Image (cartoon, rainbow, N blue to C red):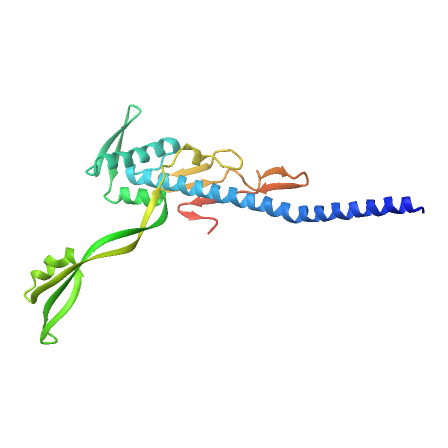
Length: 251
């Protein structure tokens, strides 16, 4: 073999090694990317099913039965919350008018709070609180003498009415940071009724006689989903489960 042929062979071998190296990286990381995508779709789909179930559960609380028309149920539930926001006395048996139709609803006092926490993401923030600390003197029966303590100014009136209250020694402004828990509420819309992977609507089954409701993924073992990825791989799903009478299949 001539030196020229040896060099060509060496260059070709080096090229094959480089291509094999990149192919090895590809076959390692491509499936990871596909699996990650599958998990994201599964997470979103199960989030949708949870919200569908919650909407129907609220509708049943308001009207006494589940509604096979999810979009109607969603609008009634959202409208009830809007009415409560506009009027804090919108409690008890009420008449809700939507699209020329009246719905008899029964709104309990905790409906607004439950709606906001159910359709919301728990979050935290740090707030700077300006407060005033008061140094007071109280007569202690146990010690048999006056005792000094500190309290917030807003509680001063409570202590001053106590027969053991002696004196206020002074006030001092106080700045403190407090961790506040709150919910970022969202409003359920029609998009949650569509599977983000297949684009099909979720399957619901209602038994109002026994007060049962089930929502199920449109993707099943009998009707799986498959979508090609990177020529040699596929994004696959055999379903995202179901929620049957409050019980989630993925728990």
